[in-house]
Length: 410
Image (cartoon, rainbow, N blue to C red; front, side, top):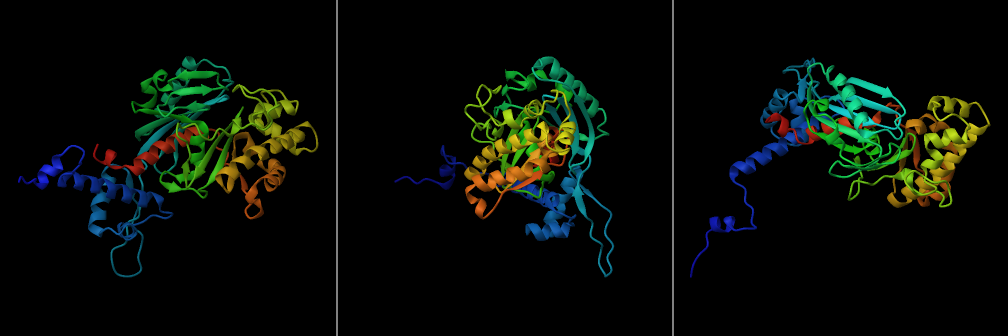
């Protein structure tokens, strides 16, 4: 009768074993990420002792890991705080300022590039306004590359660790833009068309602009949660983009296409949409739809429309009421399905949120099944002129916080 050793069992196909060295490496990576997340998520700076207390690690272990993060520039030390009693003053730990990510955005009315550091501060930015409806992708992305290069030139020695591009359309998980109706782009790989030098040589990640813009609400800074954890974000531009955020994370769906609230049908017999359907929300609440309903030229600024709507009864005020009606139908469906307690309005919708709110709240009270107990709150986004670019940078920086070992050991 033969015997089988434990070493032989460990070498059999289908059974994975880790060497002590591999286990130790994995444990270090996990602990390094935990320390980084703890420092970044803190509302006020923590000392090494504070990090040890929150992570249940020993002080010596935390100190070694913090030293690694300091050496990589992912964490910085502030001047020690003064203490009244005996003992050494604690040294506060904060995110590093010398590491940044590049966020890019192409929208129907502008190009944007923004460099954001690990503290959430904008290091440099450029926004170029233009009518990009139906533009050609190659020259447009070439223009974006020039704008990005200008921003990188102002990096002030920052270490660029990632780059992201926000586009107003359906983007596959591989980074291929399948369709952007308002740009007129279909089936292309923007990362291959954008010059590598435009991103400082780092890989480019492409995403939906509303998904990325929603990160500016979900995160107060890289690694630090925002005030709202569960909400629907609407990106108001020529059309309407959308994203659903649950527990601080954008719900992208199986293929990455979730959140297209702008193409929820409000009226099957309504006007035709660029997407090919009829009666889509953006045909009532998109910027072009609002301006047309108000009898204003297509190039009218959102601020001018808002001023006209606030001036009293008239076509602009009627357009707002029509948009609130359509938003109420579409958003009630989203809330009923997902049980999300807050709605954040961005872009031109954020600029008229106060005008939309009364009618929209009435619609939600009527149509949301749970409104008897919890009426969804309606808030305006902070007015960032290119939130998709900011979110694209935040996405890259969050990846650094979640897995700092890649940069510590580089």
